[in-house]
Amino acid sequence: MNHFSIFTMVATGLIGLSAIGVAKADEVVTPWGEPDLQGIWTDEFDTPLQRSAKHTNQELFTAIQREELDKQRAAHYASGDSRRERGTVNDVNGTDNNTVFLAIKHTGARTSLIVDPPNGRIPPLTPEAQRAAAADQEFRLALLQSTDACKNREPTCAGGKYDPAPSPRRAEPPPRYNATNFGRINRHDGPEDGALADRCLTGGLPEFGTPFGGSFRRIVQTPGGISIFYDVGQGEGWQRNVVMSGSPHLPANIRQWYGDSRGHWEGNTLVIDVTNFSPKTDFQGSRENLHLVERWTRTGPSTLQYEVTIEDPTVWTQPLTVKQEFTKQSEQQNRIYYEPRCVEGNYGLPGLLHGRRMEELAFAEGRGPDPATRDNVGALVDRAVQAPQDPLQ
Image (cartoon, rainbow, N blue to C red; front, side, top):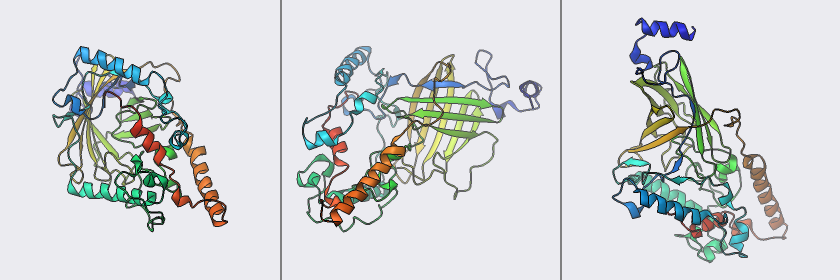
């Protein structure tokens, strides 16, 4: 069926307007009459997910505050070098200087992306979620116990203790799948011991951008569906398809990395209900029970509002709602990349695994230290802790 036929059927009432959205006369619409959300979109400003303690009761920055914060952040990132303790083990182990990858933007108008709860903070964790997080941390600290990180009481071993004997838990699987970008554990027995970023994987939904390379999404509509491609981070691009047929969610036993998206129109707003997440994904501790209700609304020729309510009663004591405002980008060729460009998973990860096997072989032959006594994650954590804090945080 061509676009003209669909548009004619809508005009004559053969297709209900409520099924595909109702567009006002002054709105941008597709040839078949839906509100047109298509294009490449990004958030032009930096806004933290959570409100900092410095702005507890303030929803919006003043113009003077934004100007001052921009000056502070310009000074903060001006050198392009976040290295600390030059010449120390931490400096050497810190490897690359991540500030060169940052996409620095102006300070946004709001003090947090979270608009509900009103304090702009992620709600408190449930007892169940606290126990799960504590189990994860206990396991990570156990694998570090015989390293210099614990011996020297470095930040990465905060809460742990030093014991020269390698932990008896070293051969255990983690309490749950290692599904975060900051959850590296002190071994490389397999790919899953590294963070998602080490494997060129992304955390998925909800996606609020990253300082490393920014965040873009391209929306494409057809009469029967919607596709959104995300270009995020340092090349961890991915795509999601939104089912618009009115069919129910997939059976509960079918789990997907980006969840199962089912959409419908409410006036000029695209509403997407997302469930069926994989337990191998993680948003602030929420995994397979994560539930999103997204609302996408075109607010002008070059503006798009995104609002998402996030809930998981097994993790938070109440839902939270986040808002973002996107600006339409140029449509020129090659403006956005459709193939993931991340190379760490292709080159770096095999090197990490091979390096650990060589260390184990050398130790077995009496030519080197026990790999269990070497901290291979702490320098990254410690450097992040020691680096000057972004004034927005």
